[in-house]
Image (spheres, rainbow, N blue to C red):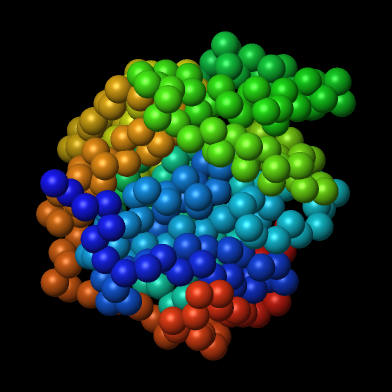
Length: 325
């Protein structure tokens, strides 16, 4: 029987990136291949709590909270609003601070807009891609997306106000439970914690900014499609087949641009790790063992700043101005 706890502890750390603290979970051997775990909306690195222990014997896992998510700081909101460029800049700064060279990315939901930017910025450093319930192809703003579609169309105050329904407790709960075969397996702490963090001062406006910025992601996704066609990086897809947000049919389109991608549709919903962590971990272990050899520690440049290895709550700095919303 697989043990959910294969190795040592998870560390909970922060790094000062461009004037704001970015929280991240870190586990695994220092010289192991790096896997960067990028969470979705409205969650945080907490969504990887069941996955990390299943991989940390062999891989160096880093799971950040984006600014204004989870335990990361909430930087001042600029007049132009928050964007995915801001989130990607913060994660890029964290990688530089930690001295990370090559890395694999695990992208889910918002994590795709962040991770695909990193892949396009640093293609020579990307070792593999794992996709779980994440966008890459255009879709019509219908059903779950209908309210956002109206918001994207005109950006009006009325439609921005209507989009607050995505931040309500019922809306958050629905993201976790829709499409799940056995809802009793889903921890209700998920939406309670997400809601508490969204209710921090100013965070609701940042979330509405990011929901609005989704409309601007087509150029990034188009560039990523071309990247997949031309470079064919090792790619694993493990997605919830019953997801109402990113349908399995839409996610499967990745095979048109990257026929060699390994594709698995799991009988679950949007937050597939909540009830399929063991299955996804097994797929990842097999995939990474074949594509990212454990025997060859991946290159890491020298960290940009001081680090306190082994601390459960470190404090590291990136030069001011590298990232600021």
